[in-house]
Image (cartoon, rainbow, N blue to C red; front, top):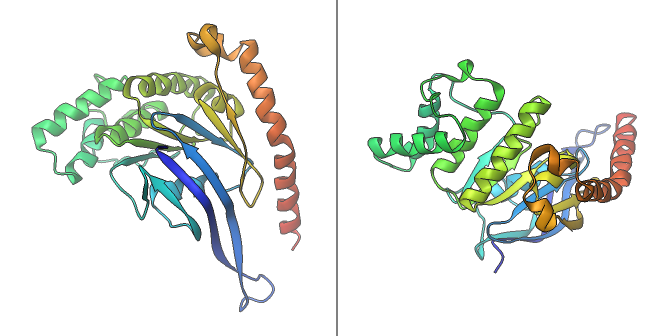
Amino acid sequence: MAKIVFEEVTKTFPTKDRKNRRNKEEFTALDGIDLEIGAGEFVVVVGPSGCGKSTLLDLLGGLTRPTSGRILLDGKPITGPGLDRGIVFQQYALLPWRTALGNVEFGLEATGVPRRERKDRAREFLDLVGLTGFEDRHPHELSGGMRQRVAIARSLAYDPDVLLMDEPFAALDAQTRESLQDELRRIWQRTGKTVVFITHGIEEAVYLGQKVAVMTSRPGRVKEIVPVSFGARGAGLQGEDLRSSPEFARYRHEIWTLLHGEVARAQQLEKEEATV
């Protein structure tokens, strides 16, 4: 049985007619999404701006409900947020008055974990993301990459089955982003979590994903699922070695070919809406 199943999921939002504000219209963000994700899989979703990638993740996180269709987690419909899913956003959303350790403990407090156990578990997950020695630093004393590591540790600490990540590295510089991609691959391999990762970056998608779901321009649909496998030789490569391999270039080209027309359509739609 698949861990996560999207069955004909559509999401619309009410909007107002710009010319006649009394008229109500509907904006379709996602239209008939069918997608299956296996337990322990790392699935990356890519698509043009405005195609509904973040909406898809919000639905999976239970932050909003589908207009039609359903989303199953372990065979049960998702009806709201739950501790079985951890979410990491682009913005770190750390509490500025708490230390790195205190931020990781925060989620554990809500689940009733005893204080001593909270501290031990928080230290364990800060160590997992490479932040041993920075437990007592406040967010303003940490770099952007370190703050994102704290956010990942906080999401992992209460042991969710599924990790949802919405462009978590988009605001970081290129070197930090690649370093955290390596870190995330290591954490995923060590923990066996199911990961759903949203990105605009094709290279990031190829580097991280076992499967890449390519979405159409709005309304968002799954255009194609691209399985990514680097074989026996490529599987042991890391960083620049993997990114410079012929297989990596082939996958990057395949996904860009699928996306190219969708990006052009999305840009054209934006121009048309701007002139209305």
